[in-house]
Length: 377
Image (cartoon, rainbow, N blue to C red; front, side, top):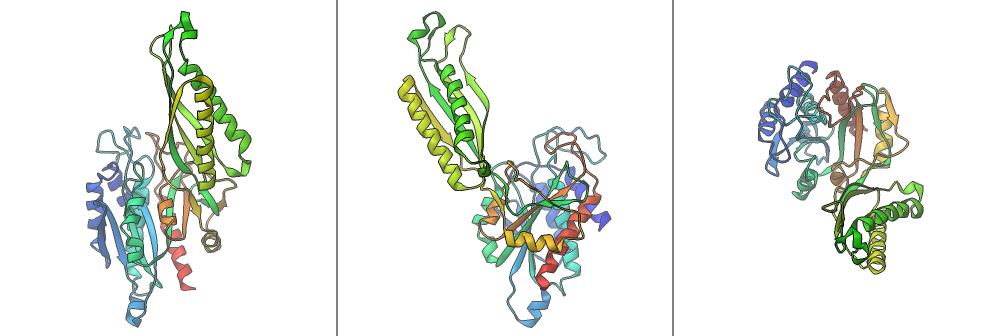
């Protein structure tokens, strides 16, 4: 396994592609899977599903449910600077989020499943999913109905994670990663020369006050356990230094772990904006995207998996992460568990120098195999 998983990772690392445009990656995966006794299905254009049917149950003439494992496929628009001999051959694109490792683990798992197909205690579906970094390809794959087509009863996913020990496994029950929504606010005022400021409606000043009030609303009105974050990273306003700005744009993100909190914050933002319009005679437009749902690990699946993985260095996080991940779409359909696999590196994800020791990928495959043993009970 060691040589194959390393080869898969390095081959895939050299051909990073973006979004759904992952044709070379798809073709590589299909070529590997065609060696094995599995049914290969293309989904959403460039996604791949490999179905391993248990011959044990098939020979007995019985029905068997399916356990799924998912890997993302897409890379990032980053110029790689690792100087590795297997660095990106596609200029301006890089596997800087570990998806090359995720795919390599699933391809290595496919080889293990092929060798054990006579003794598999359940059917297995491997999902290779494009567009995690862009539009949320998991939602598109779920919309095809493939989980119900193959009677998937649970799903697992592993993501490489720097900053925790190499080979360590980490997760938490319940809330794990946040629902993420993009927030855009436009404030329309009235321009005037600064010497005649009273003739204008200062959209920049209003935007600054609004930003402060929105932050205070979240801090004062939401319980600490709500795990809610509202932050704005961009404010654009004005044209010249001596004119009152008639237009301000705020761009930010809202992150939380339940729809009740999400809708409460949106409602309060609308109310505060309406109050500002009346008070300052401006107009305010608020827009938001639905974004990814929150990653909520099934508590029962987490607990039985934690017990099964006792031989690994397993860490339980105290708090959830405000990062988003489209694995959540699968969890809306079936119970799911998302895990982190430590790389033991200090360089973060989405960095042009991100790399890792490929030995950890073997650990990931062993974790998957251990989770499959739960189906023997």
